[in-house]
View 1 (tube, rainbow, N blue to C red):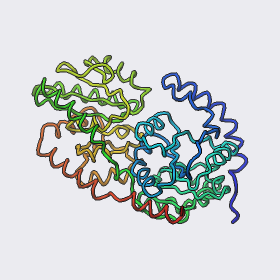
View 2: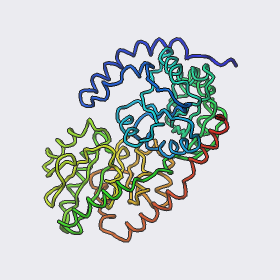
View 3: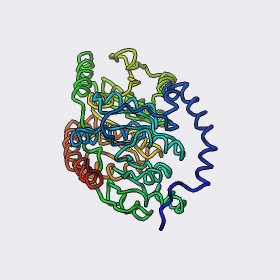
View 4: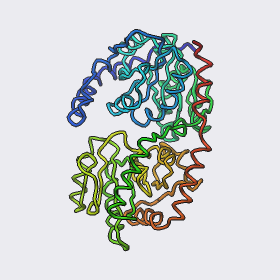
Amino acid sequence: MTMPSAAPWFYRVLLTLIVPLALLRLWWRGRKQPGYRQHIAERFGFINVPAGGPIIWLHAVSVGETRAAEPLVHALLEHYPSHRVLLTHMTPTGRATSTALYRDPRVLIGYVPYDLTGAVDRFLAHVQPRLGLLMETEIWPNLILRSRAHQMPVLLINARLSARSARRYARFDRLIRPVLSALTAVGAQTAEDAERLSALGATSVSVTGNLKFDVRIDPTLQALGQEWRAQLQAHQAHRPIWLAASTREGEEALILAAHRILCAAPPEPHPLLVLVPRHPQRFNDAANLVMHEGFRLTRRSEVFPNAETDVWLGDSMGEMVAYYSMVDVAVIGGSLLPFGGQNLIEAAACGIPLIVGPHTYNFSAAALAAEQSGAATRVEAVTPETLATAVNTLLSNQLLRHEAQAAAARFVHAETGATDKLLALIAQYHRP
C-alpha cells in the first residue's frame, strides 16, 4: 500500500474551515487566560528556533502530559548532550508548566501548529527535528503524515487508547489506519493499549510502560506542603485535612455536599477541605460556589487558612505536590462524574491514600492497579453520602491510612522503568 503524504482532501478542507472558529475560541478563552492570545503565529508554524545543536521534538499537549514527560526529557538531555529538546504544547497551562520545570537552555518551548498541511510543513522546515515524539493520544493526521514525508521518524510514546476511544477511531478507519501505519514505532503503556493500536493499523508496537510512574517528586514542593500542614496543626492540632484534586465542573457540588456531612458529624475539630479545580479559568466559579454554599473560604492566592476556614481553594499552578503533601486523604477529580479521571500516580508517589470514583477510563490500568494494591479506594455509586463515608473511613482510622500509604509506595515502585524502555526504543531510530 502506498503511504499517503497528507490527510484526505475532505479532512484538509474541514480543518481549513474550522480555523476561524479555532481563533475565535482562543480569543474567547483568552478572557480568563491571556496565554491563549499569545504566540498565535506559532500555531501556524511560524516558530523561532535559535541556532544550535540538533533537535529532538517532543509534543505534550497539556499539563498532565508535560509532567509525565519530565523524566524522559531529562534522560534525553543526558543521553544526547549535543542535542536540544523542543517541547510543544496545545495549552498555555502546558506551556507554563514546561517553563516552570526546565531551566536548561537546551530545552526550547513552543506551541504545536494546527494540523494544516502548510502550517505543519512550515514548522518542520523551521525546526528540522531529527526525531518526533508524540505523547499519549496525539494522533494528528497531517502532523504524522507530513513528518513521514519529510523523512523524519515519528514515534507515539507513552501511548494509551481506551476501549471507548478505539471504538470511536474505528468509525473513521479509512482516515486513521494510514495515519497509524505511518508512525515509525509505538511505545504503549499496556498490552491492552498495544492491542487496540495494532488493530487500528499501528505497526512496530511494543509495551514500554507508563512514564507517569517515573515521576520525579519535587522535594521543595513536598517540604512546602509539610510546612503548610505544620502551620495548620500549630493553630489546631489533629485537624484532619482532605483534598479534592483536579476537580471538574459539577464535581465541586458533590464534594461540598460531602464536606457538609463530614463537618456535621462529631468529633471536633471538623476537617479542612482543600479544593483544587483542574482548570485555572474555573477558580473563581469554584470560589463563588463555596461561598454560595455557606462555607468559610480562603484562597491560596490571598491568605493562609486558619481555624475558622472550612475550605481552602488551591488557586495556584504547579503546586499539586505541595497540596498532596499536606493532606491525609486525596479524592481524584474527573472520576466522580464521567470525565475519565485524572492521573493518580503523582498522588500515590507522595504517599497519600486515594479515593476514586467510577469514571477512570482515561487511566483505567493505573486506577485498577492502584485499587488492587490497596493504594486507592473506589466509590462506585457517587453520592454526597457515599463520598463522605469513604473519606471519613480513612480520616478516622490511622492504621488504615498507614496501610494505604505503604500500598501506594509499593504500587508506584512496581511500575517504574518506562523511561529506560523508551530510551532503548528511541535509540533504534535515532543515532546521533
